[in-house]
Length: 83
Image (spheres, rainbow, N blue to C red):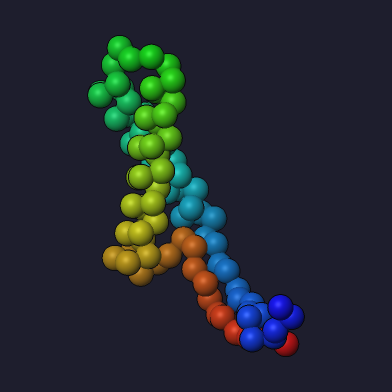
């Protein structure tokens, strides 16, 4: 299994400002959704609901910045065979 055909490398670019802004936006949306829809529930439902809404909003935000805005937060810049 020491085949050189499966050895690749690449540059992964991360825009920390956009990633942080997406995280703060997703956390704010998750808190608002919890305040409106999860009133009167147990604390463990709040935790699970927060993480579910946060991850859905974060992935939607990253998808929209990559597809619609053409300004990705996480991008694979180059992909080349490693020697």
